[in-house]
Length: 130
Ligand code: HEC
Image (cartoon, rainbow, N blue to C red; front, side, top):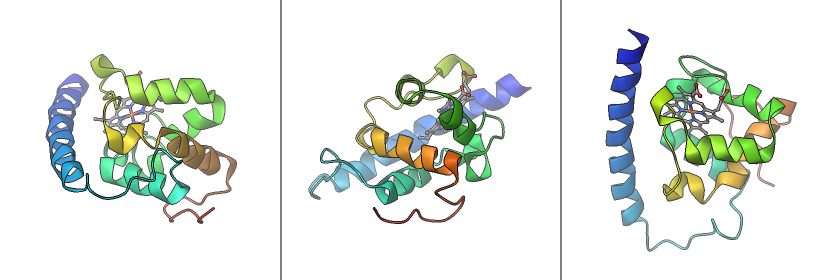
């Protein structure tokens, strides 16, 4: 049962990733500040667009998939980045390597979840600009 749900989610995530590619291509002309270091607000937006919450639950605190906040609290930056970019496709976690929405902001995304974990960033709200 759980396996069937995950398979369904995975095919859905393929569709979403395809849609994201189209919308990102449309924005390809926009100046990318990503390489220069995305802000926490950029990271927050990207995480919402990618909809990590549909598997990781409201405020990313765990649902079918484990809490991202808890993972950022206990794991190193390297392990966090590997978990997101490499994913674990057989277990239902997509690999985001090659997805510029996430990969270009991975450091800021890590900092966002560290802020959530240490309480300096509130759940549900846009983070303060740095
Ligand atoms: C299609 C569902 C799905 C989506 C979307 C998804 N994840 Fe996951 N994620 C999972 C599952 C399932 C796991 C657990 C994999 C495992 O058991 O190793 C996981 C694991 C993780 C982990 C490691 C947590 C741990 O305790 O092992 C991190 C970090 C993570 N995801 C971050 C993200 C981020 C950031 C996004 C959005 C960019 C995202 N995930 C989107 C399903 C998803």
